[in-house]
Amino acid sequence: MSSAIALPPACPVKSPKKRARSQKGTVSALILRAVSGSAQRGGVSLAAMKKVLKAGGYDVVKNKARIIVAIRRLVNKKSLVRTKGSGASGSFKLNKKAPKSQQILTARRSFGFHLSPAESD
Image (tube, one colour):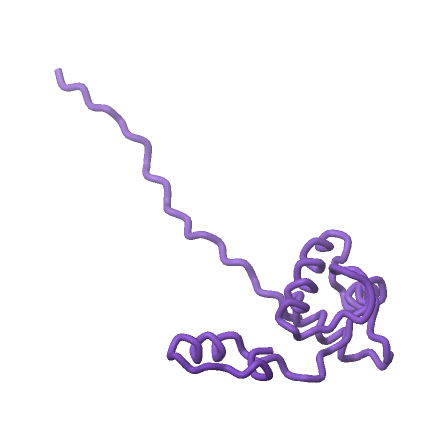
């Protein structure tokens, strides 16, 4: 007597699904576009920025944490300047001075170049 064990057929291996990138861009790019489109001298408030993003088709209610993180990151990178308020709340405008790249500054320091106080900021 031969006992043959019947094995179930092998399941096809599924490749992981790739997410489709948004055609509109990242949250940071959308925020920079909203701020640059404003003609207000004092900058754009967080509430007004959310209204512009919502009008552009971005789900503000679902992604409010991403908006806050993106604003804080842009302020830390010095792409945005906070004119009023603190944290992610308040008003923001574009930085007139282009921020210096941190990579250039760290490369200079690693090679032993001494920076004057005016260059380090």
